[in-house]
Image (cartoon, rainbow, N blue to C red; front, side, top):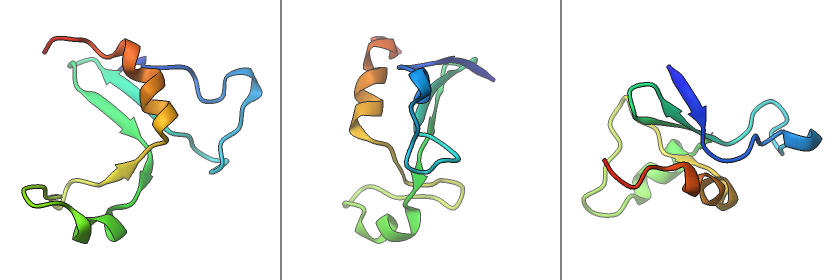
Length: 80
C-alpha cells in the first residue's frame, strides 16, 4: 500500500513533533495515489470552504505544515 515517503522523515535526527504521537507526512501509494497524514480540521473548516469545494462524508480536510509539503515537492512526479 505505502510505496515511499515524499520528503524527509519527520523524526530524522531525533526530531520530535508537537503532537508527540504522530507527525505530518506525505506518502506515495503503490497505486500511484498519495496519502497525507495531518491534523483533521474538518469540523472547523468545512463551513468555510470556498464555492465549488465540498467535503463528502468519507472525506476529511487535513492540514500539514508548509515545510512538510515543500519538502515533499521534489518527490512528486511531474506527469499524471
